[in-house]
Image 1 (cartoon, helix red, strand yellow):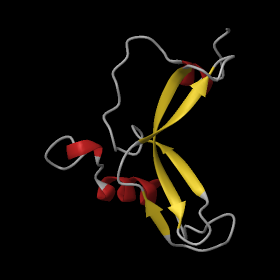
Image 2: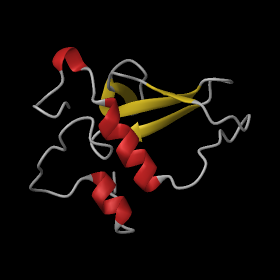
Image 3: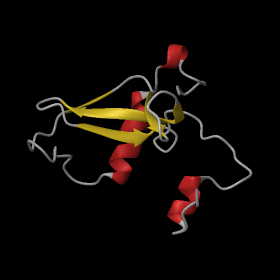
Length: 108
């Protein structure tokens, strides 16, 4: 997202993500693998694919923003809606992640 609306061609507003990370990730942002502090934020939303029973068809895709250590390549994946890269969908029913936060998991 840009300040004026959705980002063009799927690009995200890096400043929004940096602001969120600075608020939620206090102190020095050291890589847990190599200890370096230089990170690269992807300028597009990616996706983590969840599959059930078969690797042929994905069952869900979770939008993420990838943050990569410039030194060793370690990757952090942040929920794109939470960091402000995309608008969070409005839902009338609780999702599995909402249930997991409350300590109750969906029974499938």
